[in-house]
Image 1 (cartoon, rainbow, N blue to C red):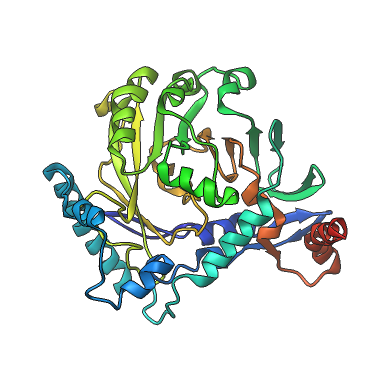
Image 2: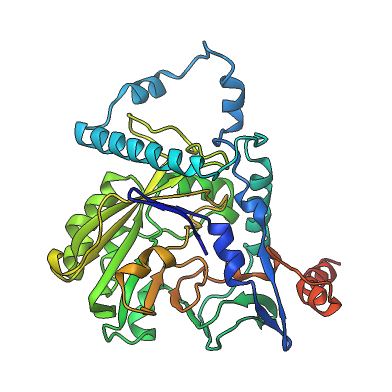
Length: 386
């Protein structure tokens, strides 16, 4: 569903294709319909540039603030430079092989991702006021369904369950009997840029947590003895050190592998350049660990995951098909700090229903009942405004 291309270096993933596939057959009022996700959110056609950068790219002699000059002149430690160089070489090998097979398109109109920007802004505005905390639910059927939650319509994948609670309440709400084969975390790392964004645009911000709070999550009590833990992480050395030196040891987890999620445009170019100085890189990290000894569990190191990213912050690509080979059939999976639901998974987070809101999907059927199902909320909003 999501895997477009596989090689020894890693995988190329389509997040959009995965979402469309899991909602290809959705039960609505005893009839089946197909849903497709808003593709504009994935219309990433060029590297992101701020408005003040657009004018600078044609000015070879643009004046740069001295402080920024000093920052750019700094170089990363040699170990980090070697790692980045390795990732870059592996990426070039994988992307070249994929392009030779016909993946990615050279004839793409470049407009600084205008459609994706507008779609993400609308998403933030439409979902900002949704209050779905302190809520538990599940879809125990073998079909994706559409149903109401607090008078709003959402789509739920098959065999899923979710908890909309603060992670500090996890011991009160879930059974801690070492039941999960795979636990994925996407922590709301304390981040200066998000703090600034919260000041400028509250809709695009989220609640952050200190590393000391993340350590207290009872991972070891939730994880099966043969299980694997994976944590999404930025390139922050502080956060990485916290994982290696604090979180994993406190959870009884041993580090096993580091994977790289490389974000690309529709042309297959990285969304920003690989950087030899401290600053933004075109990839995020997935740190994997386990309880078992290394020779008893086979997790390959330095794998690449390449995909066109969502324009919405922290909307991570699905790992379902990638991790499948490392587990028995139908493993029990838990995502903490989840931002959308997955079939067969348990999800925990304060924002897990946002990407399930029906306004993000189009129902592919001419039947008026289906059209009514998709537009009823919009009409109700219009009435409330009047």
